[in-house]
Length: 143
Image 1 (cartoon, rainbow, N blue to C red):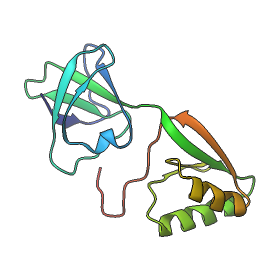
Image 2: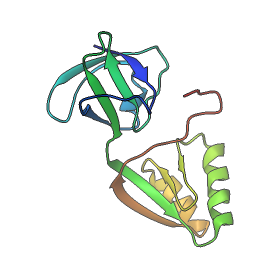
Image 3: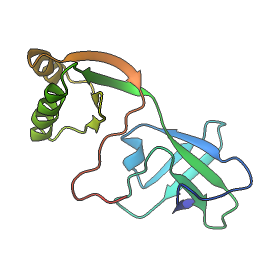
Image 4: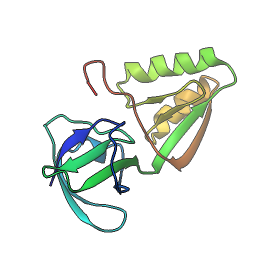
């Protein structure tokens, strides 16, 4: 049972197991999963915990360490040569309460044909792909 989230700079003697999770799976604080090598794990974290790519989780005893990895999943990646267009897109998507990954060079969201059409009309490039998805936490979320 994994019940502790450690700081990113936590030092450990052995390499941790990898737990690849989609963005939605990283919001589940109590759930059964399997690490990449097939080891079963059970998360029992405080309710409302949202895991981030790179988080380290430990068992109560501290003898089992797992590193969370953002699992590639279907996404839309939005780009533009004009950074103001990306800001406008983020504004419009935010008004629709869309989970959104925001970087200086692209926006990323879950696939939605209506939103893809709106973004294309706004002059942005929209590409469907499979990639890790790390959406921003909400205004009231804490990490």
